[in-house]
Every structure is written in C-alpha cells, then in structure tokens.
Length: 502
Picture 1 (cartoon, rainbow, N blue to C red):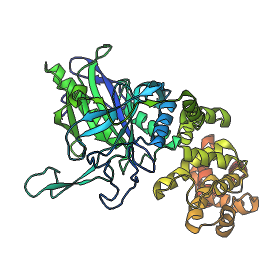
Picture 2 (picture 1 turned 180 degrees about the vertical axis):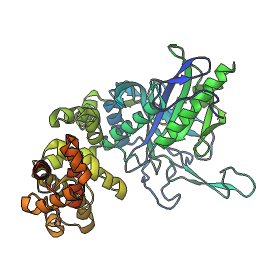
Picture 3 (picture 1 turned 45 degrees about the vertical axis):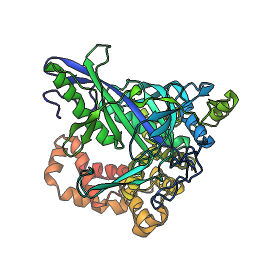
Picture 4 (picture 1 turned 180 degrees about the horizontal axis):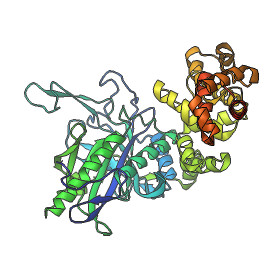
C-alpha cells in the first residue's frame, strides 16, 4: 500500500493532496519494560539472555489455582513515570483481565488495567526542531508482558509446512508500563522527537534502561488524517509493535499519504492494524483493529484494587531527579548555552553529568560544550560507549580544553591531541610534548615560513598590494597549512602584514 499522489515530509504538519491540504493526527501507545528484579505478579527473576523457559513458575505459566501477587517495586516505578508526566494518581486503581487467545499468553488473558488505571490526565513537553510542543497524556497503566515467540524454519515467520514457532516464557509476566497519549502529535518528525525525549526521561528516572535492541521499549502508533483546519477526527489505522525511531517516522510518512489518496478518491479508510516493511517503504494490513469490547475486559478477581496512599505518592514525587526539560532550561541559563546546544548536552542524563564534571574543573562552559558535543560525542558514537566510560574522563577533556583556552595548542592541533589521547591512552599535556603539537608563537621560528609562503605566491602578493586586502586570509591559511595548524594566528598576521607591506 503506497501513498499515491499525496506527499509528506517528516517535518511537515500538512499533507499535500491533489484536492487540498490535510493534517496528520498521531497518537502513541508506548510500552516500557521495567527494570525490576522479579516479574509483575510472581517471584520469577527478570533476566536477559538466559536459556529459554528457565524462569517460570505456576503463576506465570497459569497453572490452575496459582494466584498473582502485585510487585510493589513495579508500582513504585510506574508511579515515578506517571508523576514525571504530570499525571494525577487517583487513590484507587484496578487490574483487569484483557482476554485474547494467542500462544504467548498461557492464561489466554493478560492482566492489565482498563477504566481505573494507575494515573490519568498528564502532559509531556518536548522539542521538535526549534518548537516546544505539548502532548497530553491520557493514561499510564501497569500490565504484564507476554512471552516471546521465536519463529523458525522460514523467512516469513508464518507456520506453513515445515515452519514452526517456539515460545520462551522467560519474558512472560515481566512488568510493563503503558503510556497512552492523546492524538496531539502533529507530524512524523514530531512523533520521532517525542519518543526519543520520552525515552531519555524514562532512563533518567532509573526505572528502565529502555534498550531498544532487547525490546525494552516498544510503541504502537495510531494515525489518521483530516482536512486542514478541521477538528473532526478521521478513521485511524495502527502501526503495531515498533522499536525503531527511524522506521516509525518512515512508516508514518508512508501511511499518511496513503490515507489521503484513499479519501481523495472517494474511498473510506478501514480501521485496521498495519505492518510496515522498511525495505519497500510500504504498509500492508494485518487484521482489523480491535476495540475495547473485543477484549471483554473485566476486573481481575484474584487481585484486590490498589489503594494509593497520598503520602507515599508524595514521597515518590520528592524522590524524582531533575527532569531533562528542566535541565535544558538550567543549562541554557547557568552556562550561557544556546537552547539548541543545551538540548544536545542536557537531554541525556549521563552526558549532562559528564559535561558538568568537565565544567567543574574550572574551564569555560561554552568551550567545554563545543568539545563535549563535537569530538567527545563523535568518539562515543564511533566506539559504542556511554558517556563517562572509556579513557576520556571529564578531567582529561577539561585538561585539553584548558590547553586550547590558554593558547598552548590550536583548535586543529587539539583535535589531533584528542585522537592520540584515545590511541595512546595518555594525558593531553604529555601528548603535546611528545608529538610537538604545541602552538608556535615564536616570530623567529615563523619568519622563514612566512617568507617562503610570500615568495611562492607572487600573483596573490600583487593582488594584495593592488588593494585586495582580503587576500591576507589566503596567506594566513597557507602558513597554517605549512605548520600543521600550530602557528599562532596573531603572530602570523603581524609577520605577513610586515612582509606584504614592505
């Protein structure tokens, strides 16, 4: 299924159709796996990578007569998420049975929450480009994860002929939090930004590592379109169980024009669940989309309602760390950073802590920010490291920044020092001394280089002396090139003007 003649780009809020403009309406359902030691309703360990079906018990395998018990730490972690999203935590919430039959649910139902969830009516502020947006949060609720299906014997994952599927119940019963937004997200790019920043928030709360490769955070996207300026919601489709920011954006950019094409042709958008194929960039229907009544929700008879003590909720609120959006504002004000730079540095908590440790060494905050966002962040990405890990400690980066600020090394030479600091696992000052990377400020040493550059470029000399003074920059560049970027620009300018004006 393709987008036809309509077109949308990630940053656009408007889908351009053949007969007019349409706007996207996007809502998200985000599933976060909590980092608890045990499962949601039993004492089985939550682990990664262990042999299949080694962490199971009568409760998570649904043996007759086995009764669930709520994991208190999971309730605490879910409450931290709810409060960070400015939700109201009612004094009572109820677990329900969500009934559906599938091999990954041994009970043939999932213990979840329905009309009395943990928390409601929140909001999340996030940045998309240069714009600060707000998305309302409908609800935050708790549930248990399903088991893991492993498809074998074929490329499609469908069970035909010799193909088959295996079930690993280790994951079954793992605590999940589901965050359900209102349909407030205006574009594919905004959806991607929302999810990236929400993930940073959850990691900062210390309740989940949100490892996307291990499926610790997944999301469904509900998408519809309506005529630009309209307040009426259209029929929505659902993209299910995604865990890639890039694929989500691509899927939305594919699905929105498809819906516009159907509507402009006089058709009707079917409410259905879709699969996105990143190789072809198209969506295909999986099944009709379920409604709440399809799941036959009813209160879980084996669990009593949870009474949320207001005093305990306030204790959890008081324990929350500084949240990323507040930290971005503080970094901009305290360190004089641009809002864009503050968002890069202050969004991820580990990088923010690394940066503040660099600044604590007494170096200029803006210069420290440039090196943190530039060479250091590039090094982390290339090496697959988390901020604060590896040989480049805050003290070593601060030492390098200080060498630049004091004029001991030029910026270009300092980049070489940074590279060698990683390769040789040495201190910045020792690398400068060993490789002779210090700035050359001695006029006697630079004089012959300047004379050689002037002699080698007679036509540029003639241009300069003919009044084209901007040619001076060319000569400065040639001297810097000849000295490997180590020459002091101020001394070079002075020597060149004497040589050219003489």
